Length: 255
Image (tube, rainbow, N blue to C red; front, top):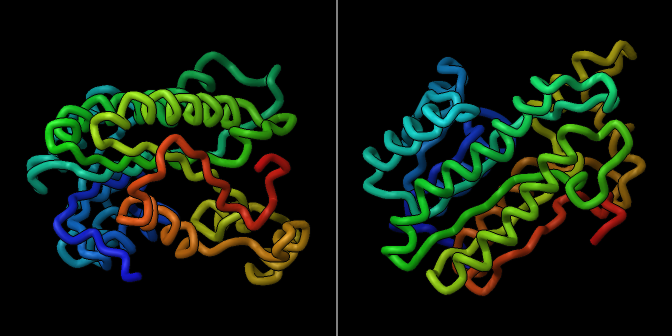
C-alpha cells in the first residue's frame, strides 16, 4: 500500500530538526503541503529549503501569542490545516527538589499548553471539513515515569491524558487524535547529548552503547518514527484514535 497525503495540509511544530523535520519530509514526500514551525530562523530556513514547497513559520509556541501567530500564518499560507503534529519540546529533567516554579511553568507551556492552544485553533476547521488528524509527540516516560523524570514525564503524562480526551470529543467529528511515545531515537537531541559526554567516543560508538540495553539492540532512526506518523495521518490510521503508541524498540516496560 502506498501511503498518500495528496491534497492534505500539515503543520508540524519543532519542524526544523530531528523528528519534526523527518516527519515533515515524510508528509511532503507523500503529497502533503507542509508548514514547519520553530523558534530559530536559521535552522528553520535551512530545513524548509530541504523540503520543496514547505512553508517556514518562525514563532515561539511556548506563548499564547506565538501559537496564534504560528497557526494563522500556516493556515493563511496553506488554506487550512488538516494534520497537526505537536512535536515541539525539550527533555528538561532533574531532582524534584531542584525544580523551580519557573522550570515547571516553562515545561508545561511548551509541551502541554502549546498543544492545547494549537488544537483549539485547528479544531473548528477540522470539524467543519469532517476530517482531522492530530498527533501528539510524547515520550515513553508518559507511561512509566522514571525517578528524576520531572518535569518532562509529568507534562508528557498530561499530554497522554489530553490525547484521550480529545480523541473522545473528536471521533464523532472525523478528527482522530493519537500520541506517539518516543524512546531512544537518533535525532538532534541525541547529537547534543553526545557532545556533552566527556567519554570522547565517536558518535557511532556512543549510539551503539546507548542502544545495547534496548530489546532491539539499537536506537531508532528518525525516519522510522516519521513512518509511524505518516501511517496515522493517512488512510491506515482512519480507524485509529485515542491510542498512545510506543516507538521505542521494546524499551518501555509498559505496552
